[in-house]
Image 1 (tube, rainbow, N blue to C red):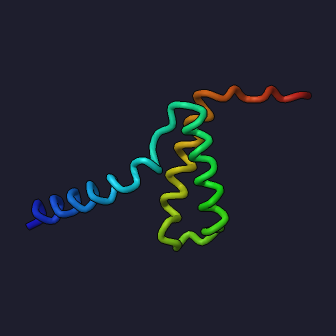
Image 2 (cartoon, rainbow, N blue to C red; image 1 turned 60 degrees about the vertical axis):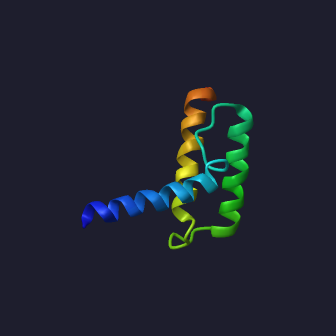
Image 3 (tube, rainbow, N blue to C red; image 1 turned 135 degrees about the vertical axis):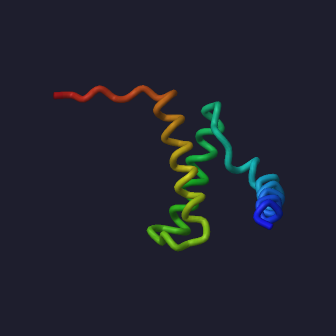
Length: 81
């Protein structure tokens, strides 16, 4: 029974992912990065601090994707003492 439930979850995930994969992805270019930043800004405007909003976890995931891109591609500013 549990195996059947897992398969149903995978099938629903595949269907859902195919509809959002062009919007949420690991950015490889500056253009993709900027797209995610704009998307995150829009989500923040809509969701704010509401952690119970249905898209709050999506906002978190996009934030992590942006942070990872920045860590890899954007040099840190040197602190001026």
